[in-house]
Image (cartoon, rainbow over all chains, first blue to last red; front, side, top):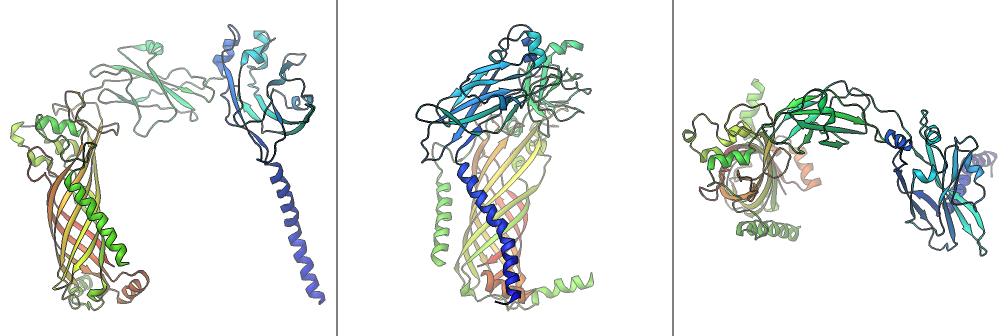
Length: 338
Length: 243
């Protein structure tokens, strides 16, 4: 082997070896990744309504999670999963003792939550849990709740699943954590719209296009009430919520009658459901309109087209069968020729 | 402009020798476009309600919109020209405005639309015996039609014929009819024989035609007074490929 050839081989080895190392790493990771704990969905965030409820009559909002634990088919080691909740990441290190579950604790100043809210003693793909804010807020006064969970800083709550294997004596050994999910806490309502919606009346409906200058909201709430004036529209409860507004406007049909004047407002909602104040109102009066079928019918005065020789569920017309035969026959001939 | 005129005049006499041997061809596929408007309003007497627009005119402002047709034909005979039997399917749609029952202007707005899926079976005769010297091939077609149609309201849902609100007759159905077509197919192979040769060797396309046709259709369940009149006289252009 010449010196030049040796140099080339060495260079090739240098170039290839990181790949070898990487491959080996991937291989190990693959082996580990056969057991994975995941959340099936992210729970809804906590908004103004929930926080205000905490001041008075308890916290109705519940948080639902579902665990998705994928275990390889050959692995029959018993597993236990713990669902942890916390406000500070340091909590995870403090949760070293798996025996204290379920148990949610607050720190001495009652500003940080850390604990286990649920445990599943069997690793299944359909483990799910629902717990209320009341449960995790136990021991807190309303003020403490406000300060801790609904503080003006909007400090989020975090959830994580921690997986353990079980030996024959029931001792738990930490195996892996799921990804962390964040429960958004947002106690600031979106800015109120400054412009009235565009309202185009139709036949027993209103096409409403909200005109909002702020960032695209998570949802719009559109409300329409008949014969109201001024701020009375703010009390209107005939409302629809929609996440998207079609280019031709949202079709509002709830309790709409023709020849009645409606006032329409909209509010914007953020991702946790906080609502803005209502927009200025716009009005519209729906009127009876004929689509083409009705226009045709009004001319034919009941004598005209009613569907003709349609392909119906009651039977297929002879000519339709003829066309079907032509198509099938043609394709057959074509295939035979080719 | 003069050059263009010369080409147009000379084109028919350009060598049509690229026309493939008749026996090699077995089928033809076509794609065609035409500005179509169903003749629905012809079923009504405008004097019966003076001052009020007829239904298609009122809803769709007498629009003509593009109908797309694709077709396939099997060659039956090539004696004294070629005779083929084929079928086709197409799509046509028009959008318009819902109108006031009285025909008066109103501030309210809504849309309505009308879609047709035409199916057709037809015999086609192409007088292509002189195609080797004349690149324009006269064509005559005749066939039967079956138009599936549906009317939509402003919400995009199928409309109803019932003004009483009973919603017992959905505005969808089908109508029979027939058509005849006259036209000329321009053999494109004469324009680029080399390209045509490659197209034949690589794709199996023996001849390519630019098609110009005038179709007269009568689609009204054979003059039934209770049916839509979906016939029209339509100028159609397209592309046909002999396989």
